[in-house]
Length: 207
Image 1: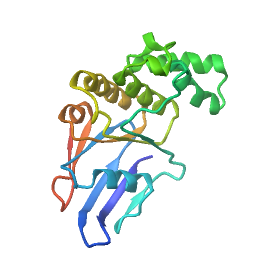
Image 2: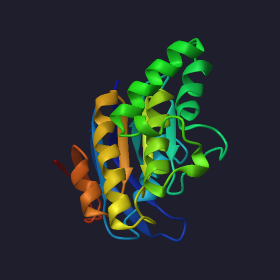
Image 3: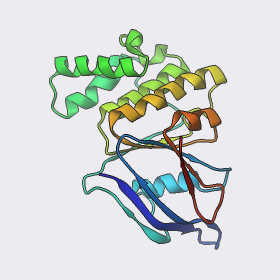
């Protein structure tokens, strides 16, 4: 089920308008880059899409059982826990037996180029590997909606390229994914782009 914005706008208490007139439908299996200069409202719009913040005007329609999952800039994991465990445990929590969860987790790790690191501890992973693992864990959690905030902001170009490859793999998961980014290469890894550069309204284009 899609997430739909209809005439969405937001103005802060001091009267500053962040954006207005956003009409957009985010569908399953798409990865949309949310772009625009600092102050254009990317993080604000992520919060509105997630239901954490109500827009001052317009409406947001989400599936009744839509579960948002937020992936932050800095990857958070358990240092001594294996990469495989980080992906398998959300599946076990949904009722899969551990053997089945491990097998499916290896498939997910393969998609994100991490199967060779399945037995490595989180604390042993590079920055790019850790961020890709967070994306893989996000998919394993089977959210209806996945929000990714500036995933390459603090990474060097080589490491960021690894994460961009992981973002491109998100579309195969069938989840609605929205990625806020300043990075042109991250934008290009997505399947569509919503540009908040024009405050009056967003400009959607396919990637």
